[in-house]
Image (cartoon, rainbow, N blue to C red; front, top):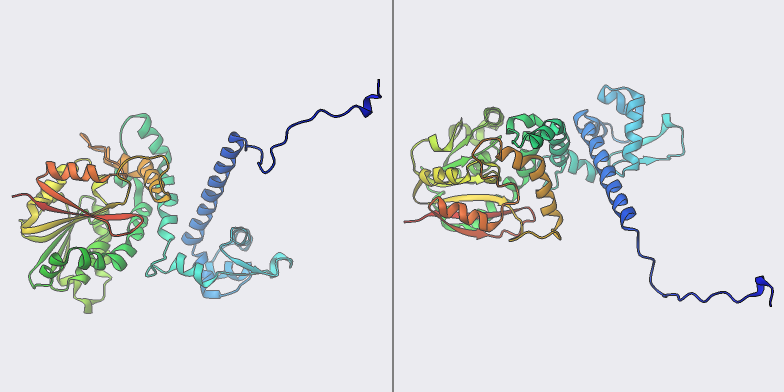
Length: 382
């Protein structure tokens, strides 16, 4: 018998070119680690916005921790930790990182400054930082109790950060996209609104950014913003007061807290409901009220999430975002009053058609090619 160390080794078949199958538990854990890291870094960006650190960096230009701290009136040691973290996250750059902490110089790149600080930029992303962290995360304990109690959570519970973040997210759409969408896809409505004396009702106007955008689009029209939330109407009035008097918006724009069903008499060429119907407990009642606000031949224009015709777990990132927002905000808000349609953010076209039909309206779906929004044109049935 040959010595054991000279025995031929057992032949193990090898599949060339194929990597071992990943462990699914480990892969899922790593995925959630990435999500947790992104969430934590988003919170640090929230700090940077709320504490004025990004603004301080833009004012100072390349600066040390002590210089940024002085500009923001904060503690230098705490600011240094934030600056180093932001550099590791790729938000800031740092010159000569091997130098001692006291002399390291940090810079906010111009492109990042635009995305974080320039509200007029189409790439402004700060509201997406403020809304989930300041608005949704802040109410998580209340949300847990709402789910356990099988009840919703009212819009007012989410506070100023949610209102501001939601308004900011849609600001670019109203200013940069909506005018072109209306002129291209609703040319007859566009033409009617160019006539002096025409009128628009902006239902669920929130902080009034959509109302002001409509007034700028149609300088011959009167525009009336309506919202149930009194805090939002106060925000809207503040935004109106801040407009340039030379624009003449204060003479043509009004805001009122209340129900669309109790609004002024009919006669509006256009009634808008932007990014709000899916939040409402009674969407059919709201659409009936909008129908009642129309002048003969008028149009109800909805802007709602651009989601698929049907559910699929292989949804694009935009729909994943809508679902997350629905779980954390829109569905609980919609269920805060009873009875409730319990629609949620992911309101698919067939649902809109069904609500519109029940309200006596015909529906035309308008795909504007936007990853997050689509339009619906609703017209009264004879």
